[in-house]
Length: 202
Image 1 (cartoon, rainbow, N blue to C red):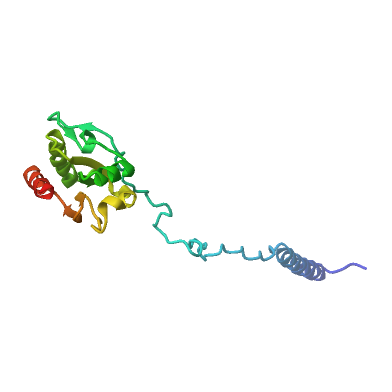
Image 2: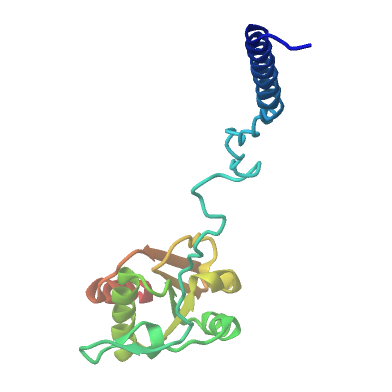
């Protein structure tokens, strides 16, 4: 049976409509399948600052080590010469021990004991005064010098003088009438020392 031309055109149009519909659905399905999966958010770095506080018990900006400080003391009996060429210190003096000074006291001598503290200006000046006395010795006078650290060893000479500082000069003498002594503290000039010795010998 022959199909009329209008029916064929209608069928062809229907086929085109159905094909277009199917093609549109297929494209929509493909687009939905290719959608990328959502990515997990990247972890943010911690913004908290690192603990840089110093350990307990330590003070920032301070050094644990302290500079050692010390002052060297001159050696007993050491002789030094200044620019003028004069001897400085008690090196020109006799330095007998306590026993010898005790014997000098026993025979009636006037003992002049110079107590020194090396390094001090007054000490050097007083040492020159004592050296001048030693340069012109008087009869019956024994001159000696000791460091202030040695004073306890010479208690027989210093007696109750109570030497607590340097420079100092102790004049001690024994006689039948008893013992006498004189303590001169600080700087003593040559003339004053000579006069004290003269008075002590009377």
